[in-house]
Length: 336
Image 1 (cartoon, rainbow, N blue to C red):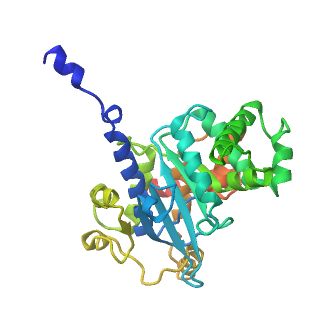
Image 2: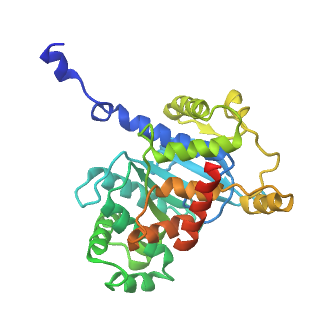
């Protein structure tokens, strides 16, 4: 191969296709959760996923890579997760992709016809997060969600034992982009706090063939189908590769029949809390779906780092000690 041909070679991400593949795999992960009757991350309610919609800009949604809709079958109430996917961002004041993501998120958050505060959430999903983004940005967002109100959050933010200097710097980055998205006017403290508790930064390693996210998704798939889990995962990605460019929407009613047949779906779409109690009543061991989803999002953690513990508790909804005990049970069950 001559030198001119060598100079033409490039990896998928530098030529632009890698980001699209990453996005499709992230979307496929949420479709897998729907097929496995898992729960959607980030939302307060553990309602079943009933629809995943792709490229939603034409619907007036600015956080437009995809939209996940969950529904309570008993009341008809819905909650949505609006998702923007960026393969990588730098959480500083000069990252154009981060600026774009915050503009879209703020626009959608401010649209009260679209976004229901207290029910809906917005997620920016990227590749694996850096240590500083995990410890500083995610922990800062978790602090906002744990605060009683805006005043409580801003009081804690300014106290060194609650929020370190690096976290306060990340807070200034968030305010910088929200001000930009708000036409140059800084939103009030109550609006900033309300936005931050509804906003999630999630790191997925979906572009790694042996990554933890795909491995755990395949573990979930294995609980819902008797087919080869890697083949089923490839089938889901294949379906998404055709749906995504056409701004398609997937439900259990319209999904590719050959894919749906691979899953043993329950006849009743009851919320997971009711389903778990039913399983216990008939003596069936409970399935750790919610914990596996949280583990999928968290990846790894340092039990000595306060930021890591805060992120684990925010995503799992459990005390850190309880979370570690539960994960040990899951791995023990997987080894048996």
